Image 1 (tube, rainbow, N blue to C red):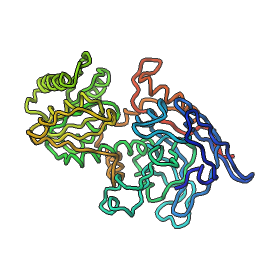
Image 2 (cartoon, rainbow, N blue to C red):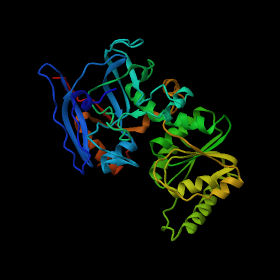
Image 3 (cartoon, rainbow, N blue to C red):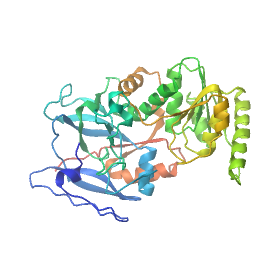
Image 4 (cartoon, rainbow, N blue to C red):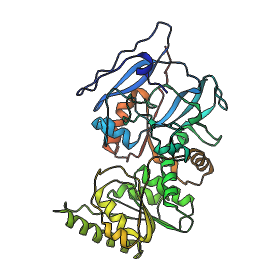
Length: 406
């Protein structure tokens, strides 16, 4: 899939902030559409950009719902997400669903009017990883709204987008556009559960109950986990988790003083874990631990919280380098399992969303904005609470009511 910059022949430099967003370069007959473009940290601009017809094997989708993700927020606040830094203006958003408005040559199985969930990762289908089914590790992966590759691939915070047809998944009749947007983060947890080989009857501990952690609880419940508990530093989120049936019990970690040295940090994580296991009456630990924070202390605690022979699945993307209690992992045969994005999960995600097996998952969506209000949406997400004191979990951006192509 080509970006607007590729199609128009424009390029922007890689100098220091702020980048200047390139002006639209269109013929008088080419339509344009509203787009929300990140041009630097907290520099989000509403633009009109060319609306190109879909290429062969692509379909054009009118975006009806985009969920804002933590990675989107990192780009918005800092102009980067981990090692990936913006080198040009970028359209954010990758948790999305919409309706097909046009199809390119060679497209089968989709027609105008089909409601679809958008799988954001465009893999090559040619490398050894794709051949083995691990498309999330594709050597040539281009991911909508990610700055890992250049030219960047624009995301879904636009009125329409063209996307490979084989990555557009028809929504079941029982699924709304919101469900279609939730299919992307849900896929992350389905993949993580597969990596952990989670099975019926196992006990599960989740570190972090933001949207990803709550979805981890939902997936574990749908797979028949015998017990699901959660840990966080935010009591309001923990209360939300228990009151809405995501977890049966929770523990709020006290905010202690920063460790003076790495050894003290490891000791604190071990003693903190002992308190957690006492609270839950689970002295031998849990079969599977989903680490959804990316914070070093929680990663350390996860190793101690897993039972002998248990698994820790690393989902949160936070600390780039951490000190691990590796001897505790080795001598107790605790498997540390990496989990990155997802592979071949969308059919299962959509089936789960339409089945009702995920409980109160729709309550994760707490706020909505229109496309022209995207900056307000990001600012709210960064604060974590709205003006009325209500907690912010998942923010959905939808089309402007009067959005038209010119």
